[in-house]
Image (cartoon, rainbow, N blue to C red; front, side, top):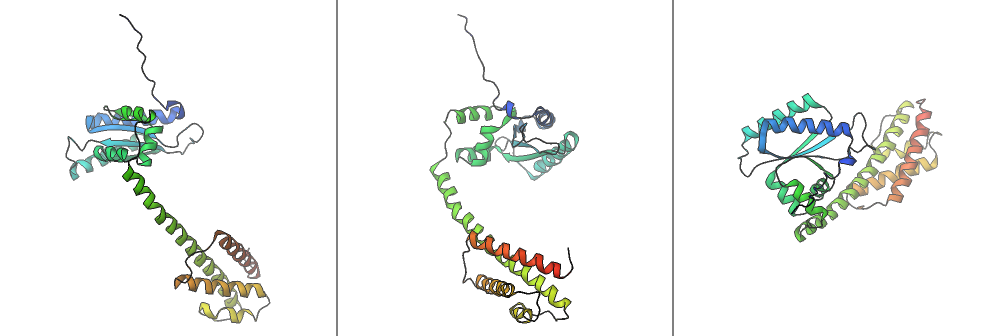
Amino acid sequence: MEFRQEGFETPNLEYYHAQNLAIAREFAKKLHQEFGEFLQVAVLFGSTTKETMGAESDVDILTVIDDVRMNLSQELLDAYQIITEKIIVEVSNRLHVHTIALTSFWEFTRNGDPVIINILRDGVALIDHGFFNPMQRMLFQGRIRPSGESIHNYASMAPKALFNANLKMLQAVIDLYWGAIDITHAYLMKQGEIPLSPEHVVKPMSKYKAFKKEDRELVAYLYELTKNILYRKKNVISGKEFDMLKKRTEDYYERIKKELGIY
């Protein structure tokens, strides 16, 4: 009996620029010639689509090396790194190569790691010794899903990220404070004043017409706010308040800068 057999087309090829594919394929071929099946997988991924590719755009490649049949000694890893860097120089300085071990790739996939899942979804296999393409196919079929442990781990990381975001907002307020203090000190020094410690800066400001009442209020407020942040009495600042302080401080800086004759 004769029947027609249809294979699957390589997914995602249409999303990658021909120039980037050529660079990636040349690199993968040379690396595979050097290492054979030790190089289990080489995958092109990332923002190298026709819409985003420019003359300086990166060509991102993930390589997966075999730590199941090979002992990843330091000597082997050093040789791999040296040869990889040599091939990058030969092929294109736009190449960015990311390498992980085979067991780590399986672990990340099993746990539904977002980075690996994105590579599976969007990547193009350049070298594959029998597992990337099947896993990519399984992902497209909905047969690879995050584990409960992975979901819990990523959910538990969210509060830390939000906490860090808030810390950066508070640090940004401190930076505004020093911006205001520094330009104030510069003006006072031009008038022959000896630089004072920040808590004493507001008082001499009243001697000069360049400083308005709202300027003194701003500097005083930023000083108190910064002190409260440093002593942990102030732990949160809203985006609205920060935007207001940023605008006021920038306006203040621009005006005093002109008073100093700096344009």
